[in-house]
Every structure is written in structure tokens, then in C-alpha cells.
Image (tube, one colour):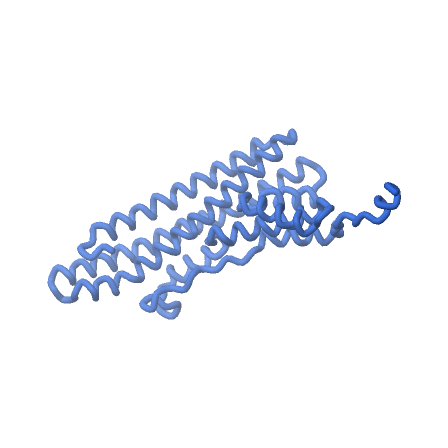
Length: 248
């Protein structure tokens, strides 16, 4: 009887390795969507610097929910592989993946599927972080250009409001572009910080497995420093906005 029950037991859910690798690899390319801008700040009216800011920001800016969904997708795959009640396991895995946010496990496992050699795998991770560092260096310069333009806008609005050329309502409308740019920058910084934290966790996983992550850690620290630079730039424009007579 026991033998018959074993023979009739449902087989664990099995996903082809190639499908798993493809799914996990695809998570790193999730598309980020920036919320629509205000009516006063339409794409057609953006300056070249503002267009560059939005273009460069797309690869980093994302909502926490998008990060959660990416992690959940990885978790669901892991849960399905666990066997048994595949639906239940997938949901459990999805919840765990959601907590991971950056889908660190998916990232690490994808790298391990591509590079069985530890040194080659760590070098691939270093290349990923370095590519982000290079992109953020350009983003910092673009951000400074946009902030310089926004400072000029704020100064012009302040002069108009003090000379009673425009009302406070009109001033706030003219400052909508500044607030829009600040929102884009804030979301971008948040996305980069999520990535930096994810890379740090991936390095921790590899370090726990015995890998030498010295160079990877150094690259991640550089990324963290660039985040601090962007935050400092954002603080500058925050101060300008706060000092305006029509700060909102």
C-alpha cells in the first residue's frame, strides 16, 4: 500500500534549466517607467540637458514595487523548483523574492550559470558595477547642467515675484519644471541606491562561498560614493527651492 501511494504521488515541478536561466537573466533587464511629467513640463519643451537627464535616468530610476516584482518573479521560479505543491511553493518563493528587492539570488545564480569559474564570475560582476559607475559619472555631469538651469529659473521667478510681475500661483507654475527635474533625480538616486545595495549583497553571498571580493567591494564603494555625490547635488537644488518665496 505504501508502495502504491509513493508511485501515485505527484511529481515535483521541474523547469528546464535553460528556461530558468533565461528567466533569471531577463530580470536584470526589467524596464523602468518614469511617471508622467506635469503639464507645464512636456518632453517637447525640455532643454538638451533635461532630455539627457531623463534618457540616462531610465536605466536606474524605478519604483520599489518594480524591484519587488522582479524579486518576486525570481522567488516564484525558485519556489516552483522546490517541488511538492508547486503553486504554494511559488507563492512562498515570490514573497521571499519580494523581500530581496534587487533579486540578488537571481543575479548571483545567473552569473553562476554563466561562469562556473569563481574568478571569472567575480570579474563579470566587477564589470557590471564598473559599467554603472561609468554611466553615473556622465549622469553626475548632466545633473549639474540641469541644476544650473534650474537655479537660473528659480532666480528669475524670485525676481518676478518680488517685483510683483507675477502672482504666487504663476510663480509656482513656472517652478513646476524645477520640481519635475527634482523628482526625476530623486527617483534615479533611489534606483541607484537599490542597485548598490544589491551589488553589496551579491558580493556578500560570494564572499560567504569563499570568493575573493576585494576588487568587487572597491568598485561597489566607488558606486556608493557616486550616490553621495548625486545626493549632494540634489541637496543644493532643495536649498534653492526652499529659499524661494513661493517654495512648495
